[in-house]
Image (spheres, rainbow, N blue to C red):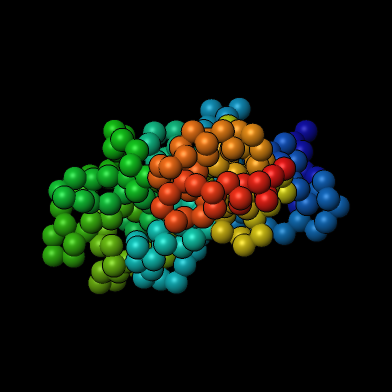
Length: 267
């Protein structure tokens, strides 16, 4: 039969994939059941698992005060180590829409759904991450131009998650943005695993809760491998007297002050 570890009559895997139950270790068993805790429904981050054809990134629907601007949504995503979702394939678009297809996310209108990370710049649409703008999923007749309301940012619609261009201010007469989708894709230590998932599982510490692992904010870990050792020293010495890589103390030059800090943080 269908797994239902908390006996609520709903499929565990469906709740996990929809974001209503947390599964931060990615084993398709709700974390609450593994921990023997009460299972509380909510909007939890969900990984688009590689085993499911995804990219390993994490996504979450964030509900907001009606009329939230695109810039405010983007700043909120950045503050916790993410960015507004950049939907670069039909499969990714479908995954993100699956997380967000609830009435509260559509502001009372099927054409104004959660903000995503597309913006109109210099007459061309672009993603906030700089990824190629090669896939689009507009709901015709969109994009219909900035027009009188300066429709220069991208949101989902309730029509299978197709896109609308909407005023970046977050509101137009009778319409208001009420949600945004956050995506976490950073891998600052280059271990092939998105940092945010490792923070959620406790593998990497994030004491200031900014979505960036503490180890990646240690400037002495120059090569970002999680430990200060000979690899960092080699990079520092290779750039001795230069700028940039190895300038641990931020004084503009790689030198003795940087060497002292690396040695003090050794191991």
